[in-house]
Length: 314
Image (cartoon, rainbow, N blue to C red; front, side):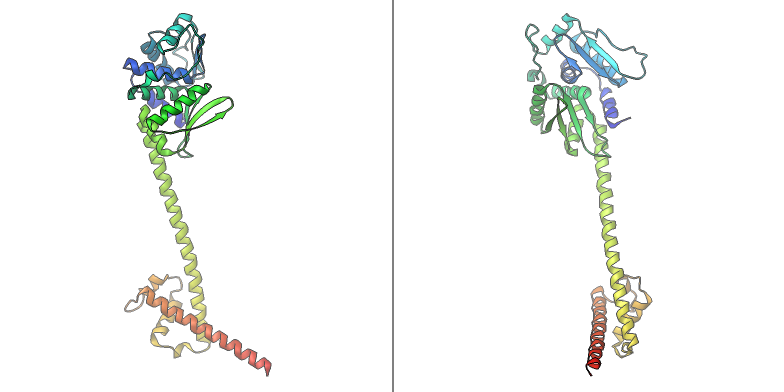
């Protein structure tokens, strides 16, 4: 099942109780369903739980039944709910604050969504009929799609009032209101009654953040390891040059000890190598000694090169 499907299943488990909330939820469904006009209501869904909820919801909201609805035994495929009876349609239109005798121009009647519970129910209905949400393991995206531009604009205003400013776009003749911020999606889902889905998004976000943090740490450790290996190789080459020139034995005991331990433990980092001394030395102390060995080897190399140039001139 998709994340949208699971989220709507969670919403379907909410009871249909208060009349005002039932009517607000049905109102949201009608404004975002396949067809809502003065001559027809048509709602199409493939979700069996939403299909089971619709008759109870419309009976509670409008005290009527659908003229056409799928058989209860239908297990899969599209389920179509339809109202074409003119008296039923006029009754719905009148209860929603429109005039059945005038042309039906759909918009949100804000008088029906003044209370917080009614707003939540209305948004739940809009999500039922026109909403979708992407799997948070992939990306964060929730959208509400309607064919009514004015409804989409007014929904944006309603969401701003609720504290969730959305974005909007037109696509293939439809008006889309959407969120891309995970915290906004979490708050929206919690508002409409899907806290489990909201928690799943939080968990997915935490998992992503943890994975990214681990990857950054691994990349940083790998880069530091590469630097440590290169530095160790440079130090060992310098020590070997001093050995070959028989200069190592002439150095102070501390530098001789440092050279010997570096040759014995080429794989150790500075802090690990410092612990091998008896007694252990600090990392900065060891770094100073190794720099001194590098400097001596560099001076030796420059001296050899200078002697070579002098011999050529003679």
